[in-house]
Image 1: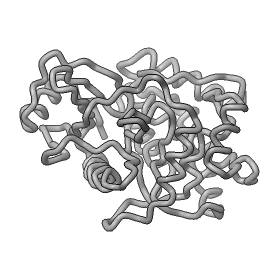
Image 2: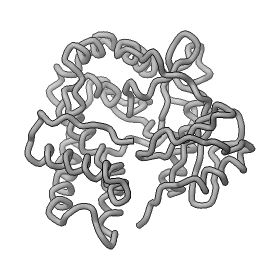
Image 3: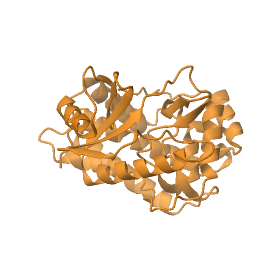
Length: 296
């Protein structure tokens, strides 16, 4: 199984289909998606390999964000008008208006936006249900079939065992906030300014799932939010997730899930390979003092 990241050729093809120029396109970041800015049109293009899962996700993202953008107080950034998503060869693309991110949002602003999202009833169209660690299992399968795998057999076996244990625990867990429409990747980097407020972007993981997923910013983890910042976030939301005895389960799932993008990128991106090694080491040794850094 292969999943090669799209490049400039795919960008040019997608822009041609959508009717935009890719001249002077600037790479913004490259993790699970490849994201470019088109300066002339002030449009952001998100590219991913056109696998069945990514096709399903892209179609869901366009539906959900258009629907949420219609609310009196918008929660999501609406995509650029036009026929989306766009399929161009082996890539799938979505197009979004560029919006500023400065000055940066506070965690209180993020929490209040998430709280509004959780009051929204399910949309009038089908949504996928949350599938914990699906992308990690997919990445492990990709690596297993590489001629030169990133992971050693011992590391892969440990990760697969950890996945099984966490999924078994998840299946036995009851979630106090219930299930509903969730963003499932709610953090400050996924907010952009719109008018006088903020809206959420990057809805690739949106689904029907436990609402606690959107409160992970309030949990102690390897990403090093201070305790006071986490308290600010949970207070603004109105629920202290750390009082729930099962909170470590969601932290552990989220941390393990984050390895998926780095497993995909590691063969061609040394910084991703180094970060993957740090994360796996800290998880296997239980060293929670190790702080993780995002690699774009």
